[in-house]
Amino acid sequence: MTANSTQVQVALGDRSYPISIGSDEIRKADIARYISGKKVLIVTNETIAPLYLELLEGQLADKQVDMVILADGEQHKNLDTLNLIFDQLIAGHHDRKTTLIALGGGVVGDMTGFAAACYQRGVPFIQIPTTLLAQVDSSVGGKTAVNHAMGKNMIGAFYQPQAVIIDTDTLSTLPDREFHAGLAEVIKYGLIIDADFFHWLENNIDLLLQRDKAALVYAIELSCVSKARIVAEDETEQGIRAILNLGHTFGHAIETFQQYKQWIHGEAVAAGMVMAAELSVIRGDLSAADLQRTKQLLQRCSLPVAPPADMKAEDFDRLMLRDKKVLDGQLRLVVLKSLGEACVTDQFSTDHLYQLLSRACSAS
Image 1 (tube, rainbow, N blue to C red):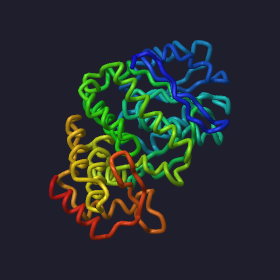
Image 2: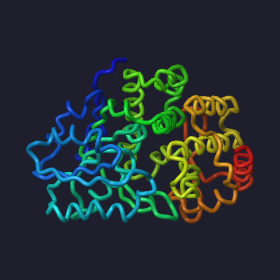
Image 3: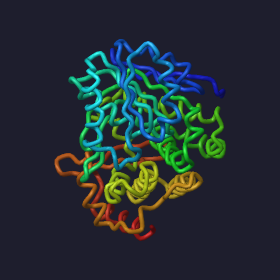
Image 4: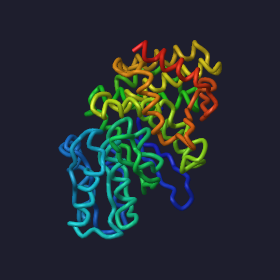
């Protein structure tokens, strides 16, 4: 394992694209080669702009570069904020050859991708994720969306980027809370598809918490390899791709309940993954020992393993029925058949679900 650059390919035929991973990747990746037109709109936020915007602009000296700097935070991931991107595109006379570049975390990436999917019925975009969560999850696979007050990511589209540029140096300025939240999504890949990776994480989590460069490149690469493999098999989430949502139905309910103002996404997902694992134990699939291993690994990352204390079983029941994974009125959940193997099912009893919700909410 080295800290050098590496590349993962997302294989989607003529829409395939590379994920470049490494130190100083914004400078080394030759971003201009992914841009065919003369105009670029960089979308970033007020936290990231002072840190990396000038560096990115320096790689685009031969382009007309406009920018929009958004407020930071999940609470701004909505249609009103999305319109700020469209306002800048129209005011700058951007055409169908314009390339949008998302420079930021998952909120910036999701909104930029959705704007690219919609503007003049589709223009190219590039993801440059600057948070661990975005690097291992939201920047890869083409899911783009904004939130609605009644549900997370309810308005969006599948729309693939031209490239994903992951500069691990950006993690050096990431606050601990955001970094730990990103580790929840890294751990997810071990739980759903790669038991060996989960075991590696148990043995190397301290290196990741210290932000060891080689360990980070390895963990990000393994995460992207897993996601790329799943996306290539099921781009629009008609089947296996749904396993990437382990814990997310519970987590999205937490975020919606809190109006996106308290826990951040990875924290809600961490608690949600424990709830999914507990349901898997109740169903008789996952061992109690593996549930405990899951909790312990998340706790080592300073992540919650129970829902917020003010949430009740009735809150989850009400909010989960708005989830995108509800089909024909039937809630579907991702559960673990064993450590490293997940599936999507609607085959669980109401008693099992309420047993889980009552137990989880009383433990918080």
